[in-house]
Length: 281
Length: 262
Image (cartoon, rainbow over all chains, first blue to last red; front, side):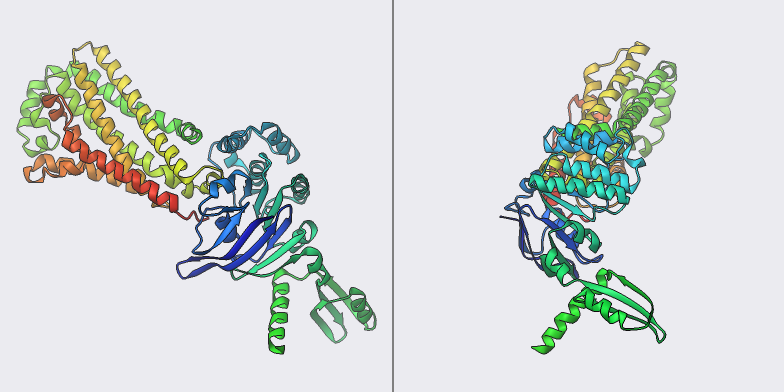
């Protein structure tokens, strides 16, 4: 069963593009990474799926329900963590978490307390006095406490320190094992590579590639910077790493760095490949 | 119910401050009445010589020498301005503040339909106005009891009912506008309340402008009319209630389709 399915989903703001004929499919139980640079349309897609904004054209189904007509049914079984999260000034953390549960009409205090403890979240603190990272933790508890079928997370790790990020992904893994589908947007490739089974790249409001992370890694690109007596050369390498090392060993190298290319560079690589294919045809 | 309780909890300090400010101000005026009563003949004469200024506040048809006349002008004006401003601010902020304070994303990603959110917010606005008016009424009645003067209790309750309905009308109009705004709106709310108040003053001054009383909900709160008729002006009230209903309907239609942007 497809948990998320969009067909030619388009959202425009006047003359400005949000998303353009976006087609996306997320299978039940998947751990899905949605990657793209800022302004690519990640948040617009998520906000449309959740019924916060209406699509200009096209359609989207989440958990089998139409995102325009049946958004309440979608939200009943969905947990959502926005990229920038704000709560009501003056409220205590425990009150926000309880308010969220009350709005859902569920009692899940036990799980909420457990999650708060794992994340090191002080329940008596006022939400307006919290840092972005701690506000995110409150958001995580609110999104997960009712054990939803689908978790939608918009750039969830921003503001979280590395230890908390690890704990956060551990929670997500447990939720995924329980049967929940995880859909999270990010512009950090390593997060997606480390945790997701499937990933989709979005650029200029459209999906440019969607595949299993395994396959994406097989065609993994490395950014190589080689310093020789003749100068420094930078290039993207795609293929067998051993061949690269042999090639480097054959040269008189003064220094070398092999890093993961930036998302932008990978996109450019995809675009180059696409345009070369087009020329060949 | 969850949203209603949350709103009241969030605004409890504001409700108390506004209620006690208006209530105590009216109480102070009432407590001053016994001292001023002996000078009221002179005051009545003074007002009689002030022409349209007296008419503007309906004082040309009121007797300052009686507690009910004094109450209608002093208490009436305090409750009219204070109550209208409070109702306007509360109503125009109701839906708007979720977007302004960026909490809309939190609220609207819970399984509560937009219509239910509007209903919860609307009920909270009217409940908050009711609480304010109840506290003000208690302050007023206590102050009347303290000075030990006789007053027509039925008329006092009629005044307060009229002002409550006036606030309901202003709240309904502002609530409708709230659904169309995304950023600041308090200025608009206060502006609407002020314009309505001044429209009534203009209608009081000029007979040609009397038609304005249909537009402004202050039209059915005129102390002199309430004392003379011992009843609300039904045509003015009906138009006011229609404006309120139109505002509320607009809020439902707009908010249920509104894009909530980050």
